[in-house]
Image (tube, rainbow, N blue to C red):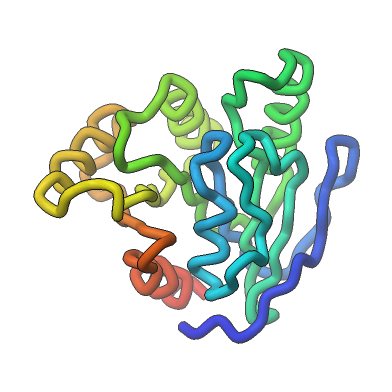
Length: 194
């Protein structure tokens, strides 16, 4: 699949109603600063379309990116941002919960983790919650692949799967926003589903 067109179509705040969509939604979840915006930019072939920041907690809204006028990439606020107040973290959790429980067009949930590290307690909680409350087992995108040695990849993927408690068939895509490794595999999954 070639991405010819992307636009930020909707931005949903805490008290906004979740829009009724007629297009399939591929939902991105991940810890604050794990690289969701870099993932969107790499997959869509745009340099700075989704704003990246070294400061965690940048995405505080639900952002609907309309891709090729065929499907949405839906970027949820990052979770586990320690410097956010408890009430702010609770508000983000409510927003994520509301979206995942309300949207009727979710096709896949994509969880982004850092391949270099064992998933955190918050990652484990989020993965379990998604599986239990939505029935989806997320596709795992293991970012920052370029930061580890090739011989370490298999071991790191096994650690991610074991820590999260995934099924044997769970799809894990090693990914690098730097050199675009994993982009074709992810787009092929979307193409097959739409």
